[in-house]
Length: 208
Image 1: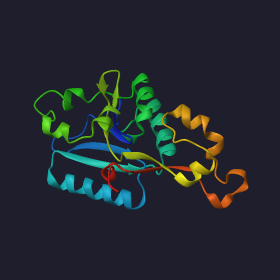
Image 2: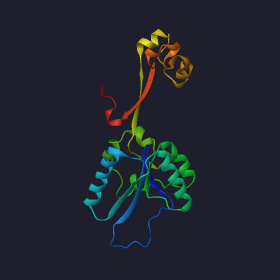
Image 3: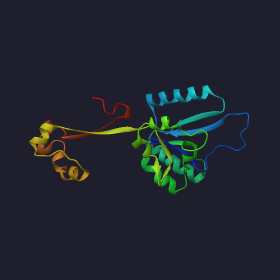
């Protein structure tokens, strides 16, 4: 089974993972981890992995970057067919349902919520509830928050007034205002976009 880092979250328990049962008991347990990180993000992540590997001798995380979510998805689907899935992978939360239906994943619940190694109440409260909820599917947790972003909608109040638009409060409102939200409306390219979406790190949420 696969363990996912969805949302990127980490979803644990890829079915049919490729760890060999012939691994020597004296060797650390190898945890294969596929992700899409590149550049400075990949370097920062690898440092965390190296620090973890050096901190103990029971486990060894071996990370492999697939370069993009598309490439990662293709690799995971191919590995599922050949039963060579990694132990863990990074994936968008929207993939969890399909992965579960195809029997790629096992839930975190027995490790995260129950047993001697379960997360404490303080540890659980340290995770944004909405991010933790994103890894849940049909009452069970298959992913943990990782590399999550906060979606923010910016709007240009001056242009909203210029084109007689009201601030949308629902997705239906946005669709209704669609024609007026086009960049360079009526040929006024200098106006720029009326509304723009941006994604930032969740740690920046709420900061001015």
